[in-house]
Length: 502
Image (cartoon, one colour):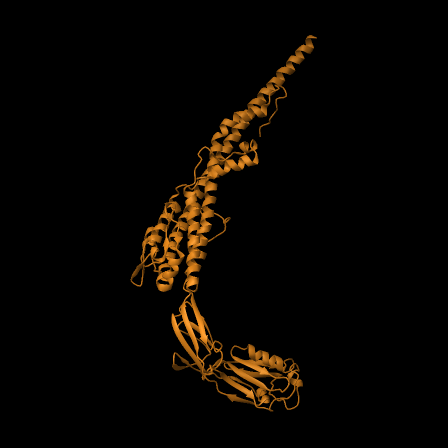
């Protein structure tokens, strides 16, 4: 540790002199600090765009590609609108369907014959306290109800009729719905499964108290487009339709018309174009952003001499153009445009954006897509499968280049753009250490990247340079301290001589 003596003897401002002497020596360190700050700013800008790309690919494109989104179907119901409920899923076949219900499916049932119940009873009375003609077999106070391959065990000292009913209803193995009327003491047990094959598999002498009589289950009987048929359940899928039978049709059939949901397809395509254009605008802006080479990151000393507004203005220019003509984004935009203008093979027919009423606009749009909504609607109404296929066709590519993804005739536009975006996200991860999955603007960087390695090496150089600057500064102070000490000694000798001569 060097002892630093201020210029009390010489009258010199030693700290200012050393600071000025060190200024020139610190210039190389300031250069390295500027390089580091520039790299950190660049990395942050990569991360901001990367987050948008990950969200675009993993969330938006994925959602648009779901069959229920772009391949949504609409359905209109006429005739008997209450007998049948219908929901169209993505696989619904366009066309017409008529459904006439003769009989609903029912499950096997056990039901108390009139007058054979317990009579009015408190359902919360413990089983052992019910009394009267209520009988059962208990072993050690335990009552067993067999339910198929397993069983329910009741405790006569704690369980009640209410808890017995609850345990039966909650048993997956019993698979029944149980109702016990407190006013008559009558019980019904119905299989949760409908159809002729349904059965009730519960047994215990405690159930003999309710005088139940069994009724077999039956299948639903109906006509679909005039063809008589049966179903074991009142809910089933036919031609991509989720059908629920609610009641007998009483001679009035339910008429269904299934078609592609033009409005939903329009909405999906328009949302995709909006998101696609936003990505293009964001990236193109960075690619063409002006670079102000004379504006470099400010040092802490420079910031002390400037106002906050001046610092903000300066740094906005210093941050500008850091991604100008970036190779990853240039390649991505080029591949996006190629993907958009290349035909897609849909069932043997080449389909392109122009035929769907979507164009890339003039040169000022820089690749943005422009929709002619009337022409797009016309294309959807004329051949919805062709429009859907253009966007959603998919083939397994393996690892391919962005250019190959862009021109694969068997891949729809969503898949092409998703593959190109993934390639860019992977390149950014290698280059800047950005996340391949996070959409957060503050996601941590992976140090194992090219920029991460550059920053690591800069930190080593800066640390070494700081050490050498500290040594140099100590040497300056050592010399000035020696000068001050010598001058002090000289002054003391002069004073002593002057006093002796006096």
